[in-house]
Length: 504
Image 1: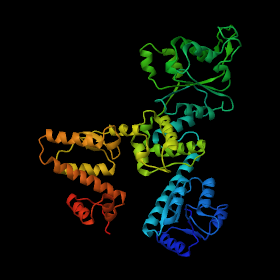
Image 2 (image 1 turned 135 degrees about the vertical axis):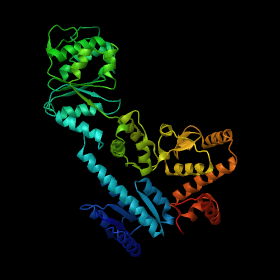
Image 3 (image 1 turned 45 degrees about the horizontal axis):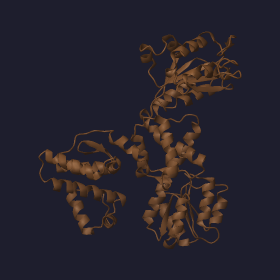
């Protein structure tokens, strides 16, 4: 691991941070000015950079700009005096990981540097993984099976049928099959048969002669001719019109076809890779797809897993797409917080990888700040998770408090039998007030007594735990944020049996 760089013209600040990080077994390298750090960046890089904002010579903002231009993924923590908060905000908007106001609490400073360090190590791991698998990303066992299949087919010209849900990456796999085949130096031509009107599809596939139909003023080469010697990828083959299936079957059978309006047979030296999200066996039974064509295409079948079958790949894909989106737009890369990544990994993503990619484009443009939290995500994502898990509603006050703990930990909790998570409560289309009303109504209908006391305890437990989590367990800070006294919060913590409180 690389050292942490500390840039400050204040000897005491450098000394304090060096000693504190040394106690954490973290290596450091110190600079008295920004210019020396810029020069050092020519030959070396830190794991995390901590810099003062106002120094003799070049400022911390100039250093930040230099770092972000060369190493956009490197976390930079800006230190500033209280009078410089306006500049600190500007630095944060310019890509700083976080800022610390002087004088700072040393333990908090080390904790912040630790977080930046973890982020840096994760980013390095993702970049390495991306560089190792530049075509298709995936570490899940289901994707490893796909990679092995591509490897086995690398020296083959056999017809392949790729199945999988929409958005799962079927064209990427087709391109990989082509790239690693003996035809790699020849064209790869893709055609979505569902996107072309029926009247034009025949001409798209096989081309047409001049005068073959109204508007055919010149001879046109079809996709089979364009892919000569290479690979033709026919996406959504299950939607191909029945009469065109017959013509495709002939090409696959004897390797010849006719242009529309033509009389001269054309030779097709093309490898066909087909893909569909539909069940072709069912379409054959329903008389919508030719059985003989199905068997011609189904020589080797390759099934792509849905994204919900490879949830462990979601963090890797998310960071990759955020990097790609930022490069395309020329902006700084957004970072997902760990809770936000875990939340995304819990979603089903019916649109699969394509939906995740679109989401990352949205995040890059719309999400505020550089670190994306759950509330920064599109509102329509929350109800998807809200219906993911159903469980039995608790009926007594202990269960009410337990539900609060589940709520705060992010696990599925219950209100009147409906699953929800921390953010879903107030972003699922129903306000938390209406959900509270529904819970009270259910408890009254069950004949429970002391309803207001039970719900009141539940409410207090939820709010106090949320405040403690926000302040990392610091009771005094939580009391201040809640607007109650220290004695009050101490008493309620004891009454409600809340754990995870730091002694102060």
